[in-house]
Image (cartoon, rainbow, N blue to C red; front, side, top):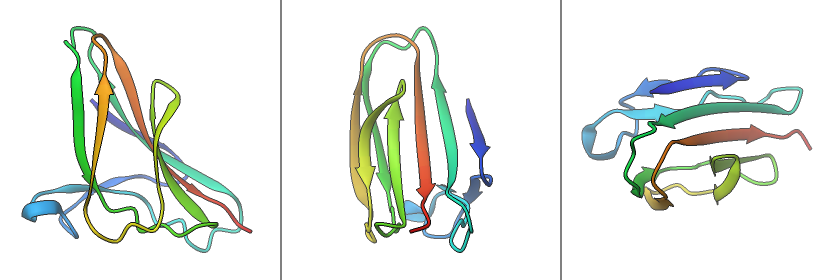
Length: 109
């Protein structure tokens, strides 16, 4: 199951969806007067047999102000900045439960 938390809610969107499907869109934190973090979390079940999580992302965030970090079980697995085209991300996962966090981090500098 999916959940969201932090500063602003992630939402389903058909805007910029890959292959005309639905995508998950981060909140617009641009212009925030404080450092902000918003997460979308995927919980993977206990009986997961292991494998590769494949996804496509557009991380049109721009450094040094903001970044998209994907964490697996609390450990950074990918960092994306200034990606304006669909990009493949593959994350190897061992058997068992996992927590995958998609973290949009906006920093005011």
